[in-house]
Length: 87
View (cartoon, rainbow, N blue to C red):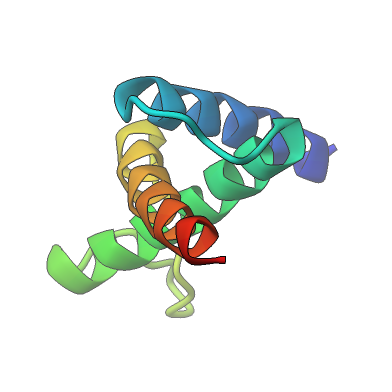
């Protein structure tokens, strides 16, 4: 059930990131979900590096909240666009 919830939240985060970053995207539903899920983890990692938060008691990076996930997904979407334009 946790994977399903992660996929749904990642999809929503990916959709919000695509909405906030206008332009034509070369990805569909699956790419949106993958960018959203990866953005959640990137946002958690950036939050732990910058603020020293989002760490569990055993030192593992936790997924970011919604806003951190959107920021991470926007970063990944920008990188994805640059890579797809070159190929």
